[in-house]
Image 1: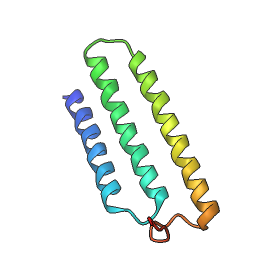
Image 2 (image 1 turned 180 degrees about the vertical axis):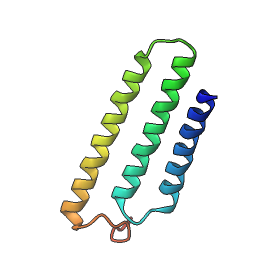
Image 3 (image 1 turned 90 degrees about the horizontal axis):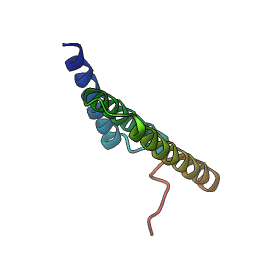
Length: 96
């Protein structure tokens, strides 16, 4: 019963993170935070799955490495946009 509740919490985290990612597209910072929330829910899912299968946790270290690189890249893009445009609104950017 406890394991089912943990799976339910992880799935709700993933669904809520995706809903925030899809609906809040005004600020880049909110989008980046929702992506990190999704990555955190996937990390918990992998942790429970690997623990359930009695496997080693080496793959989690690789996943954390890539998620930290993704977070650093998103933060550097955010800083670059704020320095060039002065804000992180998506409406102030031009795709042309």
